[in-house]
Amino acid sequence: MRLHRNLVFAVVDALNYIFNEGEYADKVVEKVLKYDKRWGARDRGFIAETTYEMVRWRRLYAEIAEVKAPYSRPNLFRMFAVWAVLKGIKLPDWKQIEPTPERRIKGKFDELSKIRKYRESVPDWMDELCAKSLGEALWTKEIHALNEQAEVILRVNTLKTTKDNLSSVLHEAGVETESIKGYPDALRLKERSNVFITEAFKNGWFEVQDASSQLVAPFLDVKPGQRVVDTCAGAGGKTLHLAALMENKGQLIALDIYGNKLKELKRRAKRDGAHNVETRAIDSTKVIKKLYDTADRVLIDAPCTGLGVLKRNPDAKWKLQPDFLEKIMVTQQQILQDYSRIVKPGGKLVYATCSILPQENIQQVKKFLSSEAGKDFSLIKDSNIYACKTGFDGFYMALLEKKSE
Picture 1 (cartoon, rainbow, N blue to C red):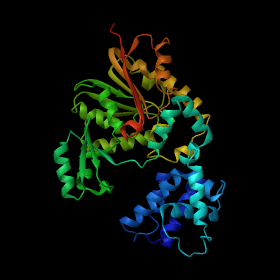
Picture 2 (spheres, rainbow, N blue to C red):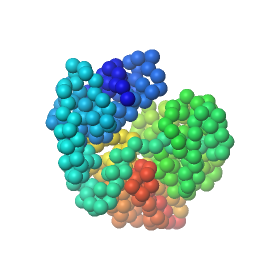
Picture 3 (cartoon, rainbow, N blue to C red):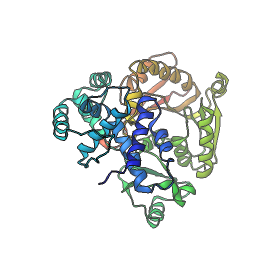
């Protein structure tokens, strides 16, 4: 593989934005890919994948390159050289890339690979916290799985098509897919490709949604004709899945504190033909109070550390701060206390997070159940989903039922 100057410089620019200016990796990659209209799919793929890989292994590469944050431009080129050497790519003779001691890089890699926090490239505090919370053996396996590149998984929009039909339409467009056992609406891409340019996507036949995330809506046990409230809907991945499971019958109210996310949800719902979705921004406590005791089903997809989705958000390893966990746990419990009041007697609630930490998951559920607000609820079942067991994102979900009057 021959390295091209403009592509390597684009990667270094991207790393500067992410590491030094605190920007989000997905937004940065989007921005950098606009540098040159002439870049083809392979060039763009190189920039995106190399950037993500270097973000994922930041600590390991920085340690081998002997550089510390904030990283100067020469530092970033040194880290790039480490990446290239470990990939077996011949380094070009450019003034930005100093003579690189290849044997020393490989030797240092072998030495650091014996220590988990370097090998899996995580901050000390995260390694300690997760090992303590999950146990050494599970955390070792889980962080290894979370460092693998996320696969592209589609969720078939059953309001518009079937899995077989979508699969054959995509096949005609040159996109090969396969079913995944145990995930009824999921198709996995055999090779990464830009599915957003397909007619099938423009017609609302599928959404891109991780397989673990696709388990949450069915867990809520919705039926057509019910009143369902998705309390932290965001841009609506799970809302749209609920709409499909409800077959567009009944009322689906999508709430969020961010109005701009709900706008995006509206746009997606229109494309997907999900007509029973109504969005409401939570701009005051009245919005929630009006809904007290009215819903058959309530989904709380709570804000969390996101430690289960490091595959697709590797920069979260560096953005998360140790005190964030304490803060978010207060928010999670508050949301459970407030939004659970929307469930009517005999109704059901799912509390879900994309975290793997028991502090954010079963411990929050137990705390809620032992509180005044949770006294009428009982835990029906819960599920810890680990990347090391499924190959998909880490998730948690708990199904609670409110007793009938």
